[in-house]
Image 1: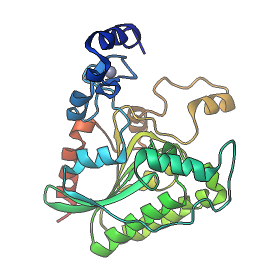
Image 2 (image 1 turned 180 degrees about the horizontal axis):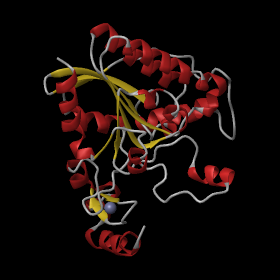
Image 3 (image 1 turned 90 degrees about the vertical axis):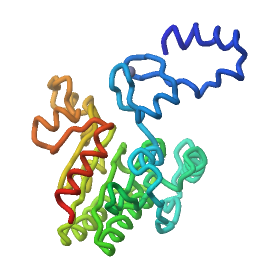
Length: 280
Ligand SMILES: [Zn+2]
């Protein structure tokens, strides 16, 4: 928030009448605090034109950017919701229902098949808006479904990760998704087809500690946070000051953890080039 949002905008709204300036017309850039016209932001693939900040986007927005209209969302197996009957200050089933209503998706991962540059691929996309992109049984099932479909149809696999880690409300069943997804990726890998792992902001916890780091090619979007534990926890544990860009894409690239850092607007072309090179 800045003086434009707090002061000028309400005045303008009062002047032109509220209906003509709906709230969702503008977005404020979290990095440079500039006001951005939503329509322009969509055209610019949700990248701030002033400071190049890459906004966190929904799975559907990601699919639209990546495929245009050339994709089909696939069904994933239904799982038993709330197996532990979990409750903190709210019931897990209630949290799930709210997230499903807000995001219009079943859980945090969408699986789709589509075509880019004439090549068919399978993709799984995490949605950080859905309970922090956390990986529970449904997300694990979705990743396994994507791997199996890619294997059966002999197609390259691309996974866009964006996750805060495990779904704590599912306890150990959530942690089990780490080895499960790794096994599925390894089984897919036997076909010698590429698995391209795209790490977007943020990719942390159980997702970064499992399949996301197993890509044949690992690409990170610019300035994404990628790590396991949060930097404050690490600092407190090792009692040392961490570098300023610690756990950022560029830092990981420098240390050899990932293969490429790519600007969102160049991502599609880059993936097309890689697929042209690796897949007949
Ligand atoms: Zn900005």
